Length: 210
Image (cartoon, rainbow, N blue to C red; front, side):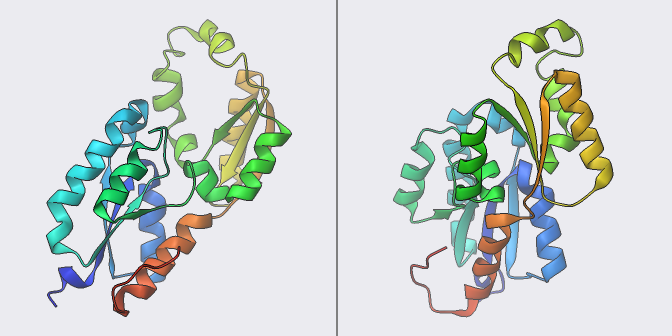
């Protein structure tokens, strides 16, 4: 089997790129190759299935297996329908918040306060670009009260324990007038799923539970 065919291709959301690279390097997961799509696709989730399918069709012949590191991510089930047609699995959960926190924990957080705005390490790093400038709050800060009027809490779902990052998240919550909560998730289902993908690369090809 050629080297590329021995690998698993992970087609990933760009919002998970840094975490996936950190995990693969730290664990020496040389059997995983990663192709990231632009995180801006989340602004137009109806475009995610077509973008993922283009990558599947382009790379399928070169890899033993393909895995998609996306949740449903607002596609309304269209991504799952596409992946079933191609026989490709994806990351468990509706979105990265659930994948990091786990379905049970995220359900508890949501039930405790439905009006919660969530931050991950990625969103915290890019908050100014994706939220303040993306929503025009840098030019019209008065719009924040309209955008966030249904929110009561900001919860920072942290993948790494970084005091300075927690301070930045707290400052963002205060600037938006939201109650601040911190929850350390680690890499959650993302880390566990990638570990399974790497470890099964030498086993006979079959359906595997993730």
